[in-house]
Length: 201
Picture 1 (tube, rainbow, N blue to C red):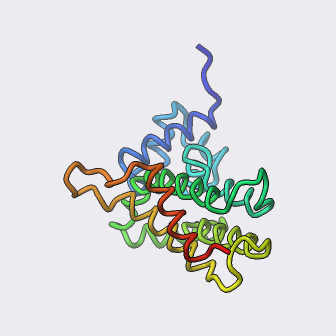
Picture 2 (tube, rainbow, N blue to C red; picture 1 turned 180 degrees about the horizontal axis):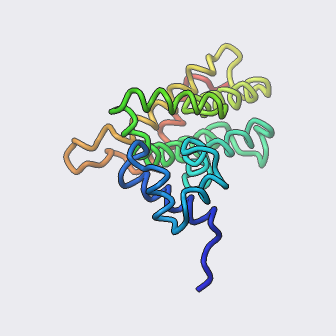
């Protein structure tokens, strides 16, 4: 069987290691070993572990930011309602946080490493605040189109929706059964419906 290209193997290995041992402990040396290449070969494709982490988020996790960018460009495309769009955003966001939280959680146990990671995110122009900005921008585009109330606080609405999705990723692990009370699709639909009662035109 033909071997995958080195870049693909590196991203696959990074994704698997970050999921199993966390971002803090997944060194570039370990990632290179799991990918079957040298550490020098890894650095030919990625300037840093942080850049590799961002690539894993973009290429191996649910694609939340591309969805938001597409909706900002054409908010009313395909005649979908704002509520339908928010339902899909909530669904993708919940999946994204569910899969990214185990990767990044280990950083919070090592403050110095977390600060270095945050600095790298700033240099790369990304970070966990970007989906909030993206959803805020989408809601403002719908506001301009008259489908969201003119007096609605779009930043607060974006924060509420994405905050609920992030909370769902870890809030129920200690609950009986260890699962959220609603299935994902039901959660996304009810969240969007509730939000629309506050911001809908």
